[in-house]
Length: 407
Image (cartoon, rainbow, N blue to C red; front, side, top):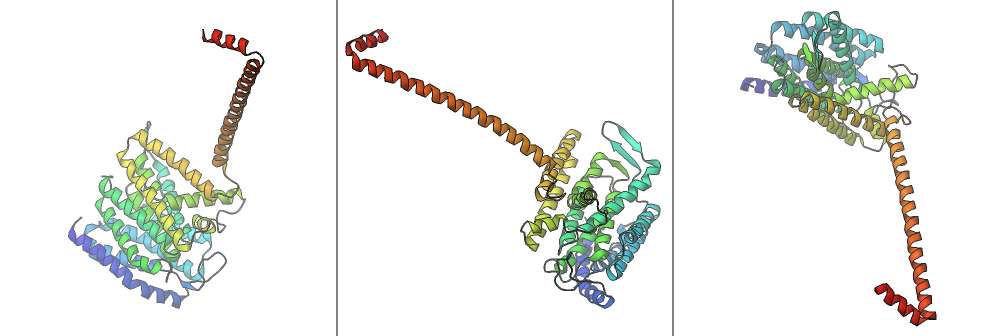
């Protein structure tokens, strides 16, 4: 990576850090303020819309500092989708949109990048089957990918610095993967990824606990949208590995989103129904502090990222076994913290049943062995008593018996 690009990344972080206080003041003026409530962790009114600083710093760098590195069609095509997402987020932070209204904005942004930036999945290579052309399925798959990841990042934005930190880890890992392991990824995508990381790093000191400004839907939707677009840019001709890598990198938000939907379906609630049973809520209910919860989730994100980096260097069978192992471990973790519900622990209950059954058999066998050993010892003691009694009553006969036994 050339020196001028590295300098531009440092400049991006500085620009973001400088812009954030101004965005904070603007948020108070326009009413983009998060008031304390039963579902909120903040105790005082907190300005949102912090993602606007990230958006401005990112686009200043891509349009001016790094303009020569990015193709015009992709730059303007992605920028159109960014504007739709940012506008949706700003309106939501000020007026609070309903879930379906936010989905309209996300849908329009997805359509825009699909048409004008050519961000889409065209083919999919399935192990042992071959390459399959998606045809008309290209748009629905692309749309679901963008909508799913955008909402996943939005859902984990519940603690100071949580969504910002997790997305920095995810984006950095995506950039490293694209730089070293995925040759089909264009270099401009990697540069844009690291530019967004730099913009988030400049914002993070204001957002980390105790926060002075929140990302808001402006930032959470924007970051989630950009992550989905960047990952799709390397998935035009997707393989099993290239699909599973971004899914694994985004393991924390995807897991939280999937189990939130599952939990609400099982409880016969609307999928859009808000609750306090997300991953960060459960960890805090288990006794962790605000800061500890954020660091624990950072750690889980780093684990997912490390595992994602193992896929490009693993054979196909190794990748399949690795995926199965991760799914089992993830299910155990989710059940242990009650993410799907306190009483929904099928795998743990099954393991407990097997352990209990095995333990019962072992205990039964051990008790039986102890009883047999006790009988044997009692028989030896009884025989010894008879011998002692015989020696006492008739020592001569006893002596003869001993000599005969020796012979």
